[in-house]
Length: 326
Ligand code: UDP
Image (cartoon, rainbow, N blue to C red; front, side):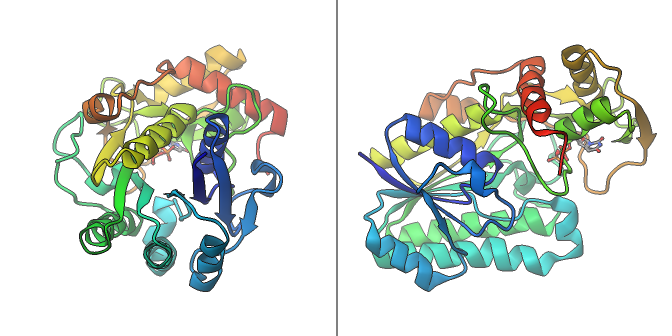
């Protein structure tokens, strides 16, 4: 049985991946400081409440168990916040990853799957985005992920730690059985906010409808969180089989506009979504859609949920169960 350490396993994508790993029969330990994650997202007895910046605590955990690999989610995720407080992003995302990699090399753990982001591409020259497009992040958040990807190459070269960086597009949806879902505080992501507008009747602001897209609103590649979790499982299997350091986009290859999402929410909830048109949000590219052939071909990944209505349905089941925010 594989022993896997998951950092940030109490968060949104981390907690779905922990379930997928357990379903696969892995033995999973979660390291999370609960600054953003939720204790109830982690199955009993698996949570180690620690900060990955605490190298001594990490080393101690790695001494107690012989981990075969690490899946590294722990990090801050808000682009807008990173534009106001860049230092926090470099400290937590870069510093935390460095602390983790140092502890891994000391403990002899030689495989890691890393949460990267489509934000490494900034405003891409073309769509769909391929992995070898220029790396030109537009925010400290994106830059922090680029720096870690670069560190990973050197930790491979020098310490033999093989890594897979998964560049996520728009993670969305929820566990179809409704046990887990998306809960950020504050919530900034489109689907939970549109659901909240449908429930409360308070209008959501659409950030611009004058983009060069068919309906004028931004287009994104919404990837179901369970399909994202599966990409981590496949990446781990690839590394366990001796696969070399790689970077992959994780997106479906299909783009939907903000208005498409609003219509999907109206269809699923049977409620009218009130909205107002606001100014563009700084740093938002018109369209971000993944080329996903590399992941499909190399890791044999195949998304199960491609329809935004299904994604919204799962998010709605969770939102109804939990209330629409904290
Ligand atoms: N968006 C919006 N209103 C909101 C939140 C998001 O119009 O209140 C738009 C945003 O401009 C982007 C899309 O929805 O085009 C997805 O945004 P989100 O923050 O969910 O993810 P991002 O693409 O920034 O990673």
